[in-house]
Length: 80
Image (cartoon, rainbow, N blue to C red):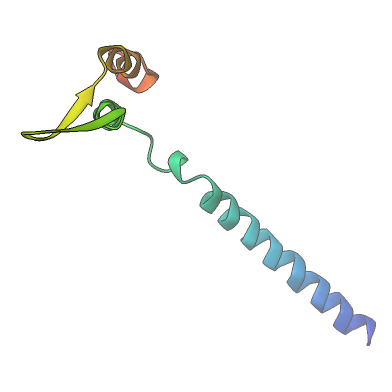
């Protein structure tokens, strides 16, 4: 293999690596692209503690403490 060919392959590999690293880093952190809103955070209150089946159908349980916890998150601070 000539030194000119090996040098060209090295340059191509480095250039490809410089393009691939930011793409992988962006793919690894999708929440950084779309920061959470207060509405999305408060919607999580319906996920826990869950639901219960009753004779009248399924009822969603809501924890006031969990709702208060979610409301104190940074994205729900006044002025955000």
